[in-house]
Image (cartoon, rainbow, N blue to C red; front, side):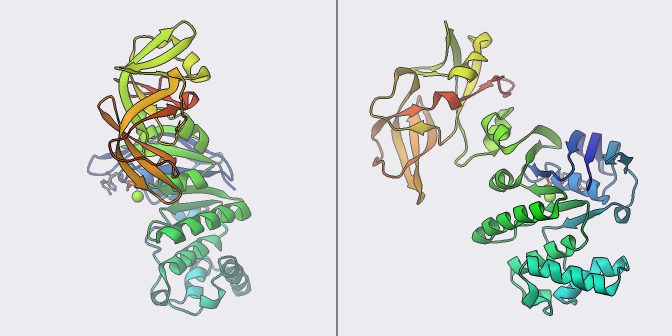
Length: 365
Ligand SMILES: Nc1ncnc2c1ncn2[C@@H]1O[C@H](COP(=O)(O)OP(=O)(O)O)[C@@H](O)[C@H]1O
Ligand SMILES: [Mg+2]
C-alpha cells in the first residue's frame, strides 16, 4: 500500500532537455491513475522516476510520508511492466515469473505457490514450461504481468503494456487489468497514449503535454469539462469540432454567433459565460453531441452541406460543411444522406464547450 506524492518535481536530462516541469500530483493509496499524452510528453520519465530508474532533478517524491528522491529501485516496493515485456528468452515462463522472488531469496515453496497462483489468475498455467519464443504476443504480455504480480508490490507501474497487442486483444486485456487492480488492491500508475484505454481504466487521468500537466481529473471530468483545447482534442473519436466566433449575451441567454449560425449555450454552461459577452471564442462541439430532429429549435440548429458519409458499423461519421468549415459528426446509421445534401442537425446545447480563442483555455466555470 502506498500513496505517491510529487511536489514540484522537475526532470532535466543531462543534455539539458526538460522532460518534466514542476509536476504536482498526489496519487492516493490503491488508486488507478493513468498518465495520458502524445509520444514524448514525459509519461515514461514520470513512471521511471517513481520506479527509481531516473533521478529527480528538482523537487520531491514521497511514498507515504517517506521522501524517496534518492532511494534505489530495489528499496522501493514497486513492480513495473514494460511495453517491450523484457522477458528472459532462455528462461521458461515459470522461471521468468519466479525470477524477482528468487533474487530476493524468498523460500522455494512460497515462490512456487505465488507463481502458480499468478499463472492461474492469468490463465497461463499450461504455458509454464514454455520459453517466451513459443508464446504469442498476448501470452508474453501475461507473463510480464505475472512477473510483476508475484512481487505483490505496493505500487504497480505499467508503461504502455498493451500497445504491442492487436486491437481485439487490447480490449479484452483492458478488462483483465481492471480486474487485476480490483483484486490486488494496490496503487496502479499506468502510462498510455490511447485515450480510450485511459477512459476505461482510470480512476483519475493526468493529461500531459511537453512535460507539463494540462489537467488532472476523473475520466468524466476530463471528457465533459476539458480545461483547454489540447485536452478536448486529445479525447474523443472522431475528435471534437471547433468553430471560431463570438459570444453574445442577450438577457438570460448566451449564444455563440458566427455568420448565419447562432447556437445557444445551455443552462449551467451558458450561465457561467455571462461575463464574456463579445469575447472571441472557439466553440467545441463533440462529434456525438448532435441529433437529427425534423425541426430543430432555433438556438440549436446547425445547417450544412454533407461532404462525406463514412459508415463505421454501429453508426456513421458525417462530414458537414458549416460556415465554411468542415465538421465531423457521429450520427445514427439509419440516417440516409448523400454527398451534397443540405441538412440540419440539432446541437445538444447543454454539452457545448467554449474556449478563449487566444489562450485556448476553457471559459466554462
Ligand atoms: N535520456 C534522455 N536524454 C535526453 N532526453 C530524453 C531522454 N529520455 C527521454 N528524453 C526526452 O524526454 C521527452 C520525454 O520522454 P518520455 O518520458 O520517454 O516520453 P513519453 O513516454 O511520454 O513518450 C522526450 O522528448 C524524449 O526525447
Ligand atoms: Mg514512453
